[in-house]
Amino acid sequence: MLLRFGVENHLSVSRRQEMSFAASTLKDRREALIPCGAVDSGAVLPAVVIYGANASGKTNFVNAISAMRNLVLWSQTGGEPGGGVPRKEFRLDPRWSERPSCFDIDFLIDGIRYHYGFEATDEEFTSEWLYEIPKAHRRKVFERDRNKFEFGRSLRGQNSVIAGLTRPDSLFLSAAAQTGHAKLSRLYRYFQDMTFTSSTSTLGVEASVRFTEAGADDRVIEFLKAINTGVIGYKRNEREIPAETQKVRNELLAVLSTATGGKVTVEPEEEERAVQIELAHRGAGGKDVHFDLRLESAGTRRLVVILSQAFRALDRGLPIIVDELDASLHTYASEAVVRLFCSPLANRKGAQLIATTHDTNLMLSRELRRDQLWFAEKSAEGATEMFSLSDIRTRKGDNIELGYLQGRFGAVPTNDPVAAILETV
Image (cartoon, rainbow, N blue to C red):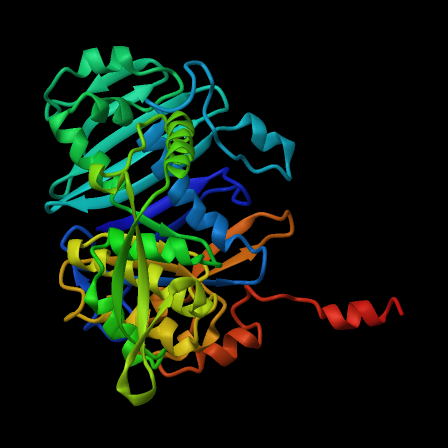
């Protein structure tokens, strides 16, 4: 369960920006909140929706979560020794290139709150830390200052050996997972299980792969049927892959393995076969007609991807991050995805959705509390600033959408582009 995330000096984020998933004290609807004794309010938000003008930094903020995840997963095995840390610092002010980038996160595993983070320059990780908070007091698991490590009493294992294997440009958590460290591997898997969907244009082959990866979940089809896409079922086709195509694929897998630092493979039974999904529609005379996913609408293809990942998250209680939730989707479809996570019946294991969007109709949804609406806004220096609607004085029952479009909360374009163009005519 995700409790908090903070980032500094990444893409359009310069000064530290932080998002808390702890529910506020607002008297809004509480039925959808996830009970959690690890936060003061006793509950965590099941979904957060981020708004902002184009280029305000919404995507950059959620990208920071992905960047942190990738460094945890690949810093030890990916890249060349001495190759440095692949960070993306704030570039509008040259002073930030000399400062470290910082990422830190709080999450819950088996009832224990963990606080993990690190700082990195282009050359190395300058610090890294992990604390566990089983009750009221924080307890050190490990601390790192460049190549100096200190370990808490609760961290058993070959810690000194692993520290010796940890390069300046890799994380101790990443190195520990590669050695099978019992405790730290569980935390590593938390990052591994995070799901990201960022493509606003989904190809048929991607939709087919995601659907089959998720076990061809029938709930995806039921959702598509319920929102009147015309889809009523599917069928799975398998065909042999030509030898020349297999050769090209193997070469591509080798390149991907080198790029990610981990061996990328396919399942043995899939090495010589390709799986293709076709969606069924009701034709004349009640006969089913099947269409290749390439022939489906962009919205249908994207829903197949998002829903396949969403149901996986709901089944396992995982976080899922969706950039541009509204891309190619009707507002009812977007709201239905949000409602899945805000429904205590659908979301029984504490899954969480973090989504960026421009769909202001979602602000009118009865499913969303005011503390679930967040905004990204650019400062005068071009840096992203994040804030919640709960930081602004509003009243329950206010027309939040109208207030936002009127500019009461910020995070909207401040100039009229048409007027600016006409002035040059």
